[in-house]
Length: 590
Image 1 (spheres, rainbow, N blue to C red):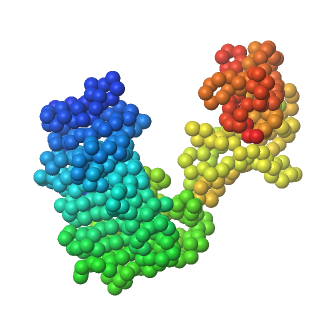
Image 2 (cartoon, rainbow, N blue to C red; image 1 turned 90 degrees about the vertical axis):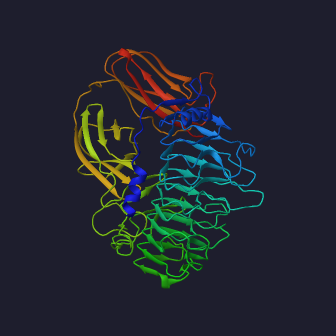
Image 3 (cartoon, rainbow, N blue to C red; image 1 turned 30 degrees about the vertical axis):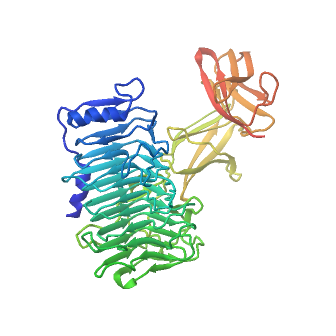
């Protein structure tokens, strides 16, 4: 039954004879409010496209069903300007009323929502008259009293950032998201980054079935209370999350279950493959002290990191195969403790964390508990790697090297060697190129960067004719390394380059003097100039006719007026015959 709940959130109802309405400067509608008015009147399942811009005190209610509101990039901003006269009690910037079913809100930013009763929200969803769903995707909420307050029949929130909530004059509880009634049958919260709740919780849910999957929940520097609060019980799945309690929290519990009553159906919760961090030094990771009789919990394959009790009442929780480190000494070998990045690395202990997990089984209702995804910093998710035993915690250590480099070409002439590799993926931490001969050791040549197409290029102009071996070493963020070796023969003879080329500047960064090497396949007029990031030419290094071959020119870091340029990034641009152009990045560091 619970698996079907998820499908309700992901399959939209068809809309007939709908209209697409555009909001923005120069569009049909200047405000979202006006577009929603017409969409509500027509009641044909309209799509509202919001163009980039800042919409100040632009609020609206959705009363018709099957409406989609989507922002174009860069994400439109709805700013309530901290003006409580525009948002009445229990409302928000966008309000989904009880008659509105199957609503999507996508790629909008909400800020400044306040009300006199201290619950001004970015999005407010009231209980619906009949079953339907609301989906909130790719949105950014910050500096509202609350970000999302909602209790439709089914609610999906995914790929959103829910940042700092605002303090109020009574210092109330300002939650990042609050599913405020158990009329909500199913709530799915996944691939989100919820953080810095002021005196409130990152996630509070009274839903009958709560799925908190593959998120990052962190108090950071704020006075947040619980990271997760499930006050009415219900069935809850907490799987694959990074959960971090900060040092300023006034409560010492991270996850609270059943603290108010048992009004929601279900008395079971599942805490599976999370990385849970307590920076307080005291407290309880999972608190069930005030729960009604008859609750059951499962805790499996979690990393509990930091001091504190694991459970307030161990008798109600089936706990097994968890890793506990109370010392905050990074024995788990996390990637970046300061940055709250708890990916596993080569330092993570095999047998205790890596390959140490077990199949967590299924819930009472038949829901498979094994994680299939993992969180991606920030506000995204990816398939969790599979193969062998599952790892403990929110992340799987890569089964193979995340980077696998491939040699594309290795060309050599009398002027030197040009090598090009392909290294797919976005997890590169460093690249290094080495050279040696049959009678010498490896010598580090440089650290070329991959371009947007994941290609790495290196040119070696320092060699004489002979046989050389080159090595590219690519290291990923997890500490694994991929090596590619190749032998190259450099022929004798002078020769000229086949194409116009501009080598990487050396040294780079530089402080006093930079040398630029470039090659011309034919004699031509050459202009070698330096530009700033605004596209202004700040210096001309070469401007004249030069013969075919290899050339060098120096720049002392002065502009056209002879003044030293400021530290920062610049570009060297070579222009030669036939419109040939080459550009290299330069960094001035003084």
